[in-house]
Length: 324
Image 1: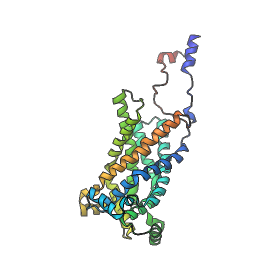
Image 2: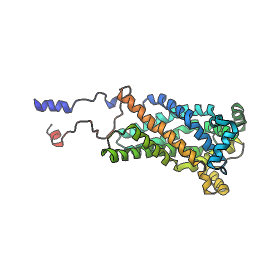
Image 3: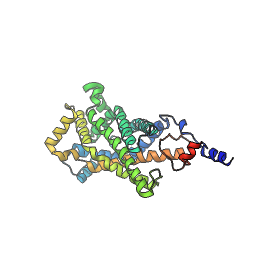
Image 4: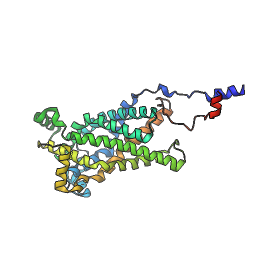
């Protein structure tokens, strides 16, 4: 009887079965827009405007570009293009969270490690964003580099110039940027989280403190800025498109930038880009995880099944399992 009681204790089900978790949780459709809009409305927009100006006016220094933005319209100038940016943030946040989290959960269910799952999920979510990001970043870039044109007039002139296709100059650069952006942010952050668990707690399944989660996000967001040349190429291509000039492919645009400004031209605006990368990672990677962990703890959403051993589950001796 004691043995039977032990067996029942081992087989006690969890309070919430992971099999109840949907493959693509709909909660991400609501969390994504809220988190991404909060990111953009705070420091996201100033970093975006600062980075965009430096990517276009590559002869300006970091502080010089910051001062010139302020001269254009004071503090308000750092939120130029907020209208299309909020639409972009809401739509791309929804797409990113739904695709990224869904891909990541399914890969983890299949036994893929957290770093590789993060890289693949981030790349998939980033590419999925391009459909809405092309037109929105095009309009934001135009608002920053040529602020005198009203939004409605810019949309009308662009459509008259080439229809919907005209809103997608630099589309290849955007796709490369977004895929590498979120693959790097999610992947690097998961890699750092894993290393911190082992180094600080001696257990790869340990739970990090909120401060440690933030630290991992800061490091991951910084490391993810290696792809900055794609961003400079995107800014240049969309600026040329706003001016009605022909836009070549991504390689052609990069070659032209190097010819005029040298290799260093591909890294102009790296300081605000690092700030933006950290800020977006803290919201869309670290923040999203902390929020979903809290929702799961309250049992408001189901816990996705992960093919790894949990330190909280009872361990069954192999010999005992064989006897059963």
